[in-house]
Length: 279
Ligand SMILES: Cc1cc2nc3c(=O)[nH]c(=O)nc-3n(C[C@H](O)[C@H](O)[C@H](O)COP(=O)(O)OP(=O)(O)OC[C@H]3O[C@@H](n4cnc5c(N)ncnc54)[C@H](O)[C@@H]3O)c2cc1C
Figure 1 (cartoon, rainbow, N blue to C red):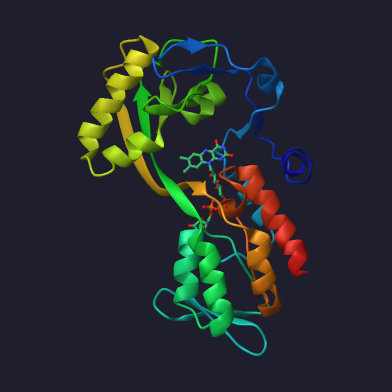
Figure 2 (tube, rainbow, N blue to C red):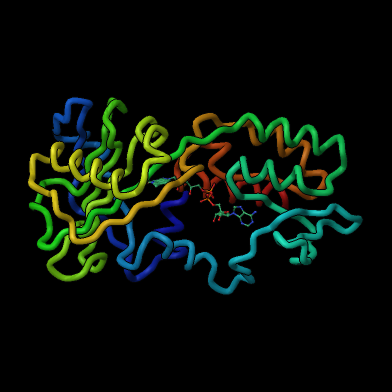
């Protein structure tokens, strides 16, 4: 279903099917060809960045950005929303909460929701938990050596790196001319262990690990950056159906990766399904 949204309804001019395959590696750093069947499936991205799909879907909708909702208040006609400072942010008949379950829990705990439903909703939301993830960006000029793949994935989940992508292979517009960008997604166990380590030490360690895995002297990137994702991927999901049976009579519902696992297309499809239930 979500691939039709990408290829048909919200098709963007800068949509790209990445040509090169994904290869795999194990704890020892042994690299080999990936599954040919999985590699035959399209690997969609956008020259202007992955949020092109969200931008397309948002067109002509009334969307208020940069508004963190701090709490909700249930009333006779539906819901009043308030921002983090307690200022009114709108009145709505129904509310579909599509934020990570840990944020949803804090939001409901801070909200004025009928007591019995509030307790049951919070009980369900507490069951979900997330793994942290650190992403490290390494830019090189000239670009790293050309490879027969555009990304590597660690299949035994025992290596410090879980995913390494050659961003400039997805589309050359993603980097300045003659440059290359590697993005390393670190494994959950590594991310947890290195969470508090100062950025420079962390980046130096990742540079060495990347160079060792690739057996290529990539020790001097011309650009580095990193991002700590506290709620990157759900470790344990919770049941949306049981939760929404309690919430829907209040004109409230929940969707997102906390219920279906950490995959964009699954979260998107879940949002559509729950929105239809609300209607
Ligand atoms: C580094 C990384 C790489 C990933 N790579 C892939 C991949 O290659 N393929 C894949 O399928 N999945 C990938 N995922 C997982 C995927 O991004 C998520 O599973 C998916 O985005 C979940 O969608 P969602 O709509 O449930 O929530 P989110 O995408 O987390 O969206 C929730 C939104 O709610 C906003 N928000 C939170 N609290 C509030 C509040 N109080 N008020 C207002 N707004 C709020 C947040 O700012 C956010 O924009 C990756 C995740 C990470 C971190």
